[in-house]
Image (cartoon, rainbow, N blue to C red):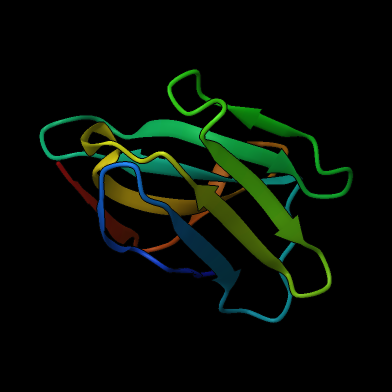
Length: 117
């Protein structure tokens, strides 16, 4: 079972920025896209952003458009999420995910992002 490992979470003041990283624990890992999800306390998991692996076409949730940028490095086999203009509503556990043609099948344990006001 492929495990994804996130890093880069932390505490930041409103208006600040953070850069999240994600990489698979296994050497071989196939997917059509990768993305980021988040879950705040008492709320369901929600989609944040995704990117197709080969072409690099991004997609964003309306709530983060213009503030977050998703990218990937095919050589390093890594996924990134550059978050800017953070606000307290962005506080959540952020999960890295890998998508096959079927569904989002690979997940990380999550990294905590806390934005103070």
